[in-house]
Length: 208
Image (cartoon, rainbow, N blue to C red; front, side):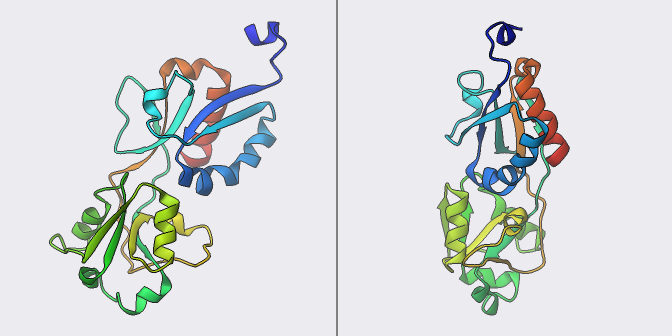
């Protein structure tokens, strides 16, 4: 009602925090559809860290990677993706079995610190130790490193859905459900705002 009185009802604006890799792979390819359904909805994208702490203070909502989102925030789990080993195609010749990872460099994202151990447990190799473990805080950089043959990245299978240059492939046939997933989160009071509700309902329909 205040927007209508101020003559600003033509634009509904959402201030959204989202991880860059999720934005590139899952969100941006679908935003055209959202704009077609709701041309009045405009989104300001924020990729800075610590988004949950900034809800209500410059942010309306966030898409985060976590085991869970603690109350009192509202949270809705989005479609999960299993963890798989991802590498340059050339590494398939030397890494034929999961136990061959003992001689490889493993690439881990700091938001997925247990992904490798979780995958090894599912493979029946709980004591497997790689030659080295390199850590990244950027999803795109870890995929770039894997594509360059610098190691084997343990990331979500969804990252193979988009063509890469240089290419990356999944090693072995084992995909493991991860304890981490993506969540939509906001303050409960924010759901009463139309831009938040429009985006939430669309996102859940597409990826929930």
